[in-house]
Amino acid sequence: MGGGGSRQPVPALYPDLAALEERAGPRRAGGRPGLREIHLRKDERGDTGLRLRNVDQGLFVRLVEAGSPAALAGLRFGDQVLQLDGRSCAGWSSGRARRALRKASAEKLVLVVRDSPFQCTVTVHKDSAGRLGFVLKKGQIVSLAQDGSAARNGLLTRHRVCEVNGQDVVGLQDKQLTEVLAAAGRAVTLAVIPAVIYKRVAKR
Image 1: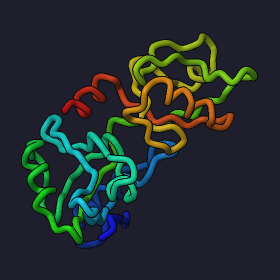
Image 2 (image 1 turned 90 degrees about the vertical axis):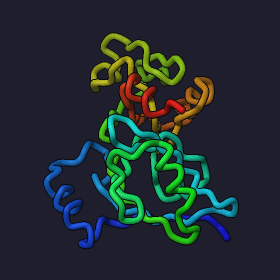
Image 3 (image 1 turned 60 degrees about the horizontal axis):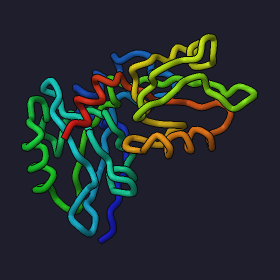
């Protein structure tokens, strides 16, 4: 049985969530819809490729394995899981979430997910030498070039780069991340998250 998944808008059967999305106001620049329903099925190993962690009584995605059903369905680091198969996940421990995923049907698992509430996007432009105007160390922005594109567009230090032009880069070494940035076009859209939040969500 092959793994896979799909994302769908939150339907009327979740009227409270649909109303919440309606009240959410403008979306973040370059962001995806605030709330969405995702259908998953497990792969040949009986796994979704999704790892969750409790942070402040909320349940968040701490890892999405590359090429997994979760990745194919569009789940990303930092997304908040609100419901799992119709049950509210508020207050769930990481262990309870792990057990629920393990016990879930191999053919259909339904999640209601909120885009990462901690993440924002910033678009920066390379200069004539191909520089973006910031320095990375262990995936974290540690310094900004004065009057460079990164600084002018509001990028901040002590933030972790999670995506480059929509590509998930969580877990990449600095050399790999630098290669991804170098291969990107002149305009580069970064999804970033405060480093302190990243450490809490990513912690095993």
